[in-house]
Amino acid sequence: PGFVRVGDFTVRDPSNRGVVNLSQIVALSSQVGISKLALNLNEYDVWSMFQSVGFGQGTGFGFPGERAGYLPNHRRWTDIERATFAYGYGLTVTPLQLASAYLAIASGGVKRDISLLNNVSVNEERVLDKAVADDIKLMLRAVITEGTGVRAAVPAYEVAGKTGTVRKIGESGYEDTAHLAFFAGMTPAENPRLVAVVLINEPSSKEYGGGAIAAPVFARVMAGALRVLNVPPQPSLVASG
Image (cartoon, rainbow, N blue to C red; front, top):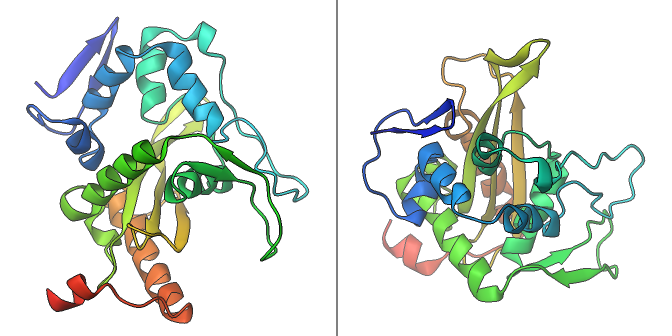
């Protein structure tokens, strides 16, 4: 029906998505779908996955003033908190933490400390099975080809990523007119060379979603970066136009 009741609360999608699989839940940013999934998972497993990719802790970057964000204790979650947590409410994450998590996916499930220096030794830890990381990349690829991230596409290169739009917190709770729009992704999707997060604070246009505002910025930046790094276009995509 396009909504799900969670206790006294209602989680809604913009429209009725019908019956969708996991990949479509991600591609279409279905809050109903991801809420139902989260409510069928163990609270600790959900929390542990976020913790393992670095949320709620430093990135190892070492830059003064870096914040750890906020990852709440799973033992205190209510059902509605578990549902909304799954699509990004109830925790805080820095853009660098989000980029670090996507780097782990891009690296086949291996989390690495972040450094400004090239060719330096950094700590590494496997946080996802490679097969799981590869499956996630496939789902993130579908976000670009058939979901909310079509504007993040880079000609001749596969992109994998996710759009996001959240309401900002004001003095009396979440604001209806102030948003954060973001896009996090990697390219080329099969063997990523680049990972980036684009965050737009309080977009002023009528279209304020991550897919409309942040995704095009990602596409432009990645197109230039791939050219600077001399990453060759993917032949199959060039041949198909």
